Image (cartoon, rainbow, N blue to C red; front, side):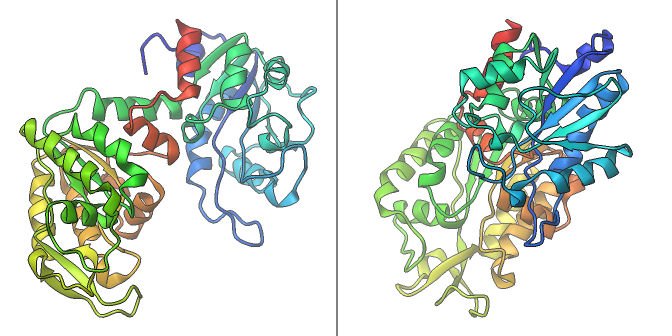
Length: 398
């Protein structure tokens, strides 16, 4: 995040928010059970500091977010922010009224916070409609984007409002995400190590190519590692593998090698004959994988070698598990590397849904330097893409 970008904290320090109408775009898109109960509230808790900051500065505060994928222009009770309003009220220890049909005007007083119903109920939200954006920008004196999780989407409440509001700035969560990612990728302590796992190379090919030009060590795991193993000439049996991308995998390895960097491939793997929670696991050297084997995790020798490498890193970027950790017998690799990252003195940043699940499963959350709340935005930042919601804030500050 460039220093020239306006930040909410700067406006608070200068006293500019008193009696102002402040509109905060948060990311409150949280998982719910069939009864509509919130089952995990990390994003809500992460959004509280910006809201509290604006309230304490004497602003009249409006907050909104998307939730799910409703049909635009149609109210759907299942995707209402009502459960979020209740949870926010608990966390803020003050009333949080939920307002519907808010695009034409909001009655809110200084020192009060209201939650505006699901932004995607508004026709034109996802297409970043200019008419809607201008209308919504007219509701506030100060627009705040604190929703890193949606920063890769150009929508009315993430981009359009920032373009037309009198003042547009970044909230503390958005700043923290960008500062942490920037520190890891643009100003890292060396060696810089990236761990990229997941099912398919195709989903993370751009990330792998971008990282191959920056990192000192690129650890690949999951189905991605199988494609790299096949490209290196190993038998992978019936494992998940993208034959059509063997050339790209070789290109990444060659790019790293030319720079004196490395893609350390597994020396041993954990295999099964079927993909099932009850499937017996067997540890094999990579050279001994049979035609009917499925590689579902890295082996203990590989995990130990990679853990040593992680221990020597100065900065770590982590996205994705190295095995099918949902099945206990194929979770040893992900567990070992999770614990190694947690034990490392390096600056570590982690993001992505499966990564967060692994962090929770192995209890290492308090030992990761920064855990990103963004999924798609985290990945697109790693790819080197411009995030539209951040770009407009930078342009407004310029």
